[in-house]
Amino acid sequence: MRRFIYWIVLLISFVGFSQKKTTLSEEEYSVLFAKVRLLLNSNVDSAMIVSNRIEMSDNLSHKAFAFGAKSYLFQIKGDSLKSNLYYEKSLAALDQVKSSKEKTKLNAYIINYKGLTYWKRGEFSKALKFYQQGMKMSQSVGDIMQIVKFNNNISIINKEVGNYQMAIKASKLSEKIMNANQGLYTPSQFRQGKSNINTNLGSFYEEGYAEDKDNKKLLDSAEYYYKKAILYSKDLFSNRINAQKNLANIYYLKNQYKEAENIYQSTLQLAKEHDLVVIYCNISYNLGDLYFETKRYKQALVLFQRVDSIYKKNKTNELEYVRSNYYQSKIYKDLGDKENAMRHSQIYLDNFEKFESELNAEVLKVNNHLSNQNLKKEMIDLQKDMSFSILLRRLSIVFFIVLVLGLVAFSFKQYRDKKRINERINSLIDEFKNKTSVIEAEEEVTEVQFENIETSEPLDNSEPLASPSMLSIDEEKEKEIVKKLKSLERKQEFLKPNFTQQAVAKKIKTNTTYLSYVVNKSFGKTFSEYSNELKINYVIDQMINNPTYRKYSTQAIAESVGFKNAVSFTKSFSKRTGVSPTQFAKRLMESESLETIKEL
Image 1 (cartoon, one colour):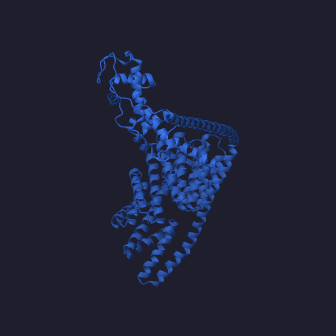
Image 2 (cartoon, helix red, strand yellow):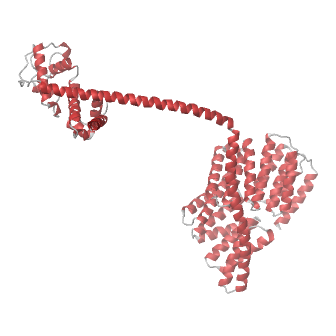
């Protein structure tokens, strides 16, 4: 009855419109254009009526669009002959349109309808080729909204052949593009686009679970995206009912049968009221499946028989038809009706083999096409960017030369630095070996008695009255302080933790001011620098003459000479030698190895 009303309205629109002018303004065309695209997958009859109105225009661009839309609408109705006819009429009208950016955009729309037509026919590889061809056109004119549509359709093709990860990736890219270009959409268009994308994502995760039933997280992801789709579909009836139906599928797969049944029942009624035959058939099958699972066989049979009836009448929902016969054969077997069980099992086998062979062939074609497209794109890009490649090659040669020269310069610097370090270390080795010889050759120095040093200033071990720069000490007394310091050095007093300026001044019976003055004048250093140098010189001597000592860790060596931590010790050692303690020890071991080889 509902369809009869649609055709009456269609006839009236033809008569009414034919009596009016046949020229549509661009504003009128834009309104009708948007209506067709909105109704295309939700209400075929209404979309056909609007397309017929556009077809009456004497503008060739308008006609080309109307013919293209009708080619897909006839395919939805199962009329492949008319579908092909209207596609050819669309191309013929388009061919007469003057070349422009708008013509390229329109051509992409028409190609998309052809891709959708092949998708409806189950010829996925052909659909993919048209989508990719249209995508390039849309990209060439910067038609973002159509790029998103093509990307969505490509994701569906990947889902159809089991490439779920590729489908998910494509859909998420579509959503990212939409979010970045939200200003291009009206609020209604944006909600519909987001609804479609989230519904697709939910279905990709749901079907991915069918391939990997151990991964329960896929069901959670599907549920999440279906719920998002429902939120975006509040004023989009067809989208909402589809998302709700799919959410019921998830509850069913999670064994939440009551929740699933409630949603199936409510959406089934809505689909029937709005004459949504494809969705109505799909929900009937899903609910029948649930009743079969919960062993309500009679209720399941009613629904499966309804699926069969819809398929035979409309030639839609082939997959549900094949599977419903599988379940009917099992039910009749359990009920003891062997004749019906045999009949439905034969229907299932006959159609399943045909359906599966066609699907497997399409899977192979799509995957081969995707692979070949990648190779083809690589070759096209190679030819297109040949001049750039030559430039890049030349730049690479220059870069290589610069890199080689840099490596040579770096190697030379490393060699020079290593040579300098070796020279420095050899110099230190000679210095300390000579120093040892001199000490051994010297006569034994009589122990200095630490007596008070007479100065023109009274001794005060706390704070002197004059600053070091204003002091003047008798040369003999100055030599006496130096001699006492040398005595402390020979006794290695500097290794003790209390070798501080205050403690040393007290030990040699002078004050810190005089001590600081003498150290600065005689050694050219502060007392702290003088103390650190003694410790570092001791370490150097030990590392040169004691192989065991050089094997100690830096922290252990630092502590052995009174440094609080390895960092300050390493800093002082490097300042004195030009290398770190580790480098110094390594060089000493290398030197010894070379000497051993020479001796052999």
